[in-house]
Length: 461
Length: 130
Image 1 (cartoon, rainbow over the protein chains, first blue to last red):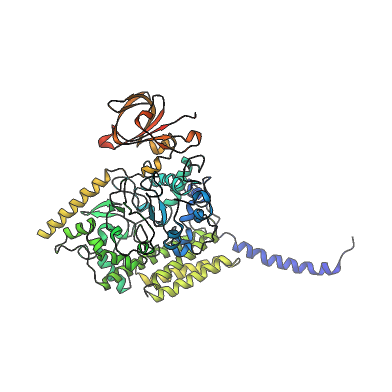
Image 2 (cartoon, rainbow over the protein chains, first blue to last red; image 1 turned 135 degrees about the vertical axis):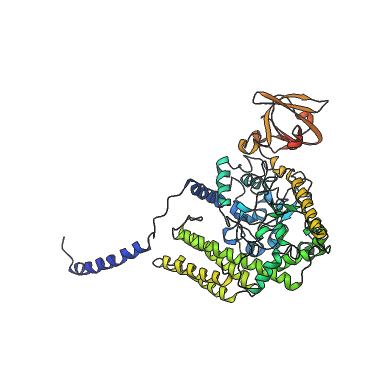
């Protein structure tokens, strides 16, 4: 075979090129080798795959259909509006067998409400409730109560032992079925015991693993004042039921766990859902028949997971704080209780500025949580800790949503513009890291620094 | 001082309320209706009694179930729910009545709780394929 002189001349250049590129590939490779997964981490990973991919032979929905990672493991009307019409969320519109009494598409699209048959499946046309989708963050700190686990908006979302582990069983029966006959083995398959273990492990790994320890050293004067009001048991009284802005009550200085209360949300006048003429039965809360109580959600994650309350009745965090000034609350059993222990017989009575201050506090602690989670996600992508969402790009993608949320909750009330600037930079860098091949780690590390800078603007601690 | 006592009393009332809630079943029993008999031993063991019906007392409305070689009696009330689990032949669960509880059928019973462990809150029986 005759040699090709031109090719021979080019060969060294190719070698140079290879010599230059290979180290770049090597640099881009693992900063540290991905750590071997512990059995617990392996279980969480399996749980994640089930959560997002497993349809249980049903109508196509997965747990992730309503609990979206990119939307704080919840959905709302604004997010729903971004979904294509063939998304499994809309099975009531696309599958004839689910066309009646499975969902109310109008209420789902307009208010983010999901149909639940909490008082039984015997009369689907008349016995149902419409509820928002609660997020699944911080569950390790928001389920336990002295009476056993509390899941879902009314605390009774799971069958059998009522645990988070059992929750998926009830959810599959309610939401995954092919028909409203709900026959196991025909309309869906039930999760195996192993799948329940994995799903529980994944859900418990989401979000905060610890409650805050209030008060925090906040830099913003409005949020700082909001924190004081929040913690003042004679003024805001928030900390009585939401100790450390979590989901657990404080009773006589003791941990009362994740309690249920009737706060009168159902009696609030002029709720959005009342304005459109849809017939929705009152939601009676816990038990069958219900006792009117609902479960206490954590507040750290509140500001970016509205709308608020079990029926998505209030859109803004300021509105949700102001609710506790309302007649609906102050005439409720919980409001009456607070009045009974108040020296002046008052339930909750805040000035508008105080409402805004408490909301500012909730916005700031939400942003701090967004930052904490983003740091964890990016570090997980860099191999410095367990990567909850698997690969680097997915870790960065979810981190970018968290950072976006932090920007949203702060700008929504004109809070901490300097922190917002750092957060926007952190978000841009996380996006760049995701798109970059050669400088992924560099951008990710710079994003981490920007997040630290943002945190430094919000708190001294 | 009077104010502190009032607050303390209030919190004691709240504590009692919370403890009262704590004694109520927290589970969403309506989806339990659709779970086949024996499907989740790990979830059921603490809360359900599962076994085979060995005796039915029509007059006293007492159901006797053989469990692990022993027998347990459960009293049914007018509000006890009876469910017929027909999942073995691909049919939906139906509401049942006391005469549907026949000896030889596999059954699960959820009691009213620790204070009324002999009173059935619901009874689910597995209907064999025809």
